[in-house]
Image (cartoon, rainbow, N blue to C red; front, side, top):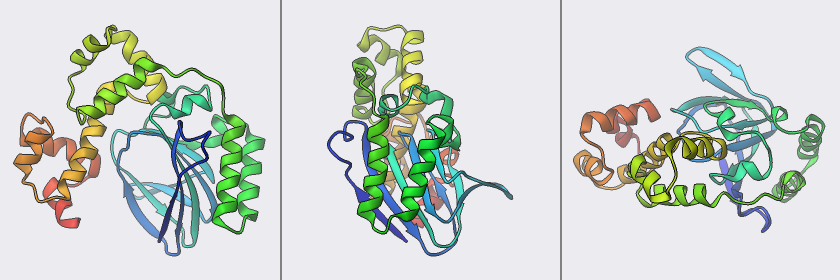
Length: 254
């Protein structure tokens, strides 16, 4: 399996964290855990599907996956090649007027939010490209064509910064007070730009911090304490929701 990370061109960097070229010569079923940003995928060869138990649902060659409430299971055909675009937390708003919350927990065709003809042109250009560099240029050209002049919502950016600064442990009522905004107004703006509630976003940030801690020699008690869980039962419940595994079993797989 190949997974090459590319930093996007300068104009896209405030909104796109990275572009990834992913290829796999073999058929594979795998889990994807919740992350704090939306992702676009262009399959330039092969096909990808989601699995829900024994039900396999093929995905469109060009699609977008929103922030999720738990892990997702995907299955790729042998010889798949994919370009992945990882948005920053508020990045989608600079390319589309689609509220990010409408994609929560979903993987949908990209032509639901962008022009169908332009998506077809990207798919054709990617299929004809021979090198990673050519494919990256195709994707960047498409993104630059969708880029809109839009002022950043500094309050939401500050909220995201504070959530990361607390490793997802900040209490929401404290966050509202610090930002001098009512809960209802704050949540509406946050959901629209980020794609989920600030509480769920903080939970995902905390989960990803836990994943890093599990790769180190720390006890579950230490991890609970360091990440502001009330008790191990709460910690284990959250962890199973996001991975489908207990922390102990997951740790043994690392």
